[in-house]
Image 1 (cartoon, protein in one colour):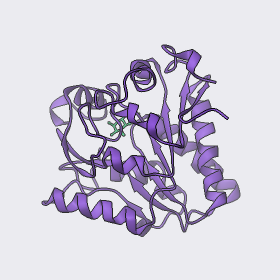
Image 2 (tube, helix red, strand yellow):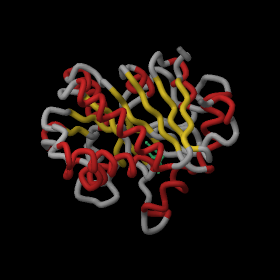
Image 3 (cartoon, protein in one colour):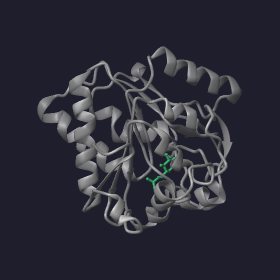
Image 4 (cartoon, protein in one colour):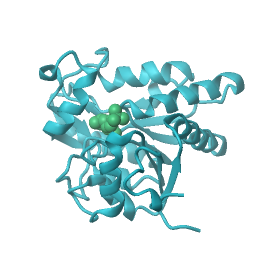
Length: 250
Ligand code: GLP
């Protein structure tokens, strides 16, 4: 048995999506009351499409599933099409019969981000912890919105986005100046407490971050590198994302 992080390289983005949605579907079959941690961004979109496809023929029961998301932009309310609330409803929640009351994201409009962060951490504890957390990776190695420099002990909090992240995420906004500069994100310690973590990455633009996460030093320069210390973490990437360290993958 290989040691965590398990590293799986598949040919294309669609293969990553199918593989990942199979893992999530298996998790729901094992425990229909699962607590899933979820991510946003363009990478998981195809995984969510695959999950919706699998839900339809078998009517996989999501009614007892609870979800916790990684992060939310500060200043965007839930009806804003660029908000992560909106994204999750659009790509997943509305299509699998997940009751609204079972879905949780940080409130980016909170006037008290410190209390919001503490309440979010407590929410995760009250739910019994995260069974499986699906996460992506930023081109600078961030996970959720834990930018380079984030501490291993970090918890849900208000953060400033790096210039790189603002540039990367500007493709979702009309112009760069309208990208929020802050977010509320779970911390690295919050993510590391999940029982299982699946990190997905596709495309050459993620290859440097994947290399740094797997081959660089474990530390805050590349927040995703901390995942190497998790006992049950799997990196699922396509060939383009693995290009700088292909030999490390099965
Ligand atoms: C955002 C999210 C991250 C995500 C990253 C990569 O910054 N906060 O959770 O991993 O984007 O997104 P993409 O998949 O669009 O490259």
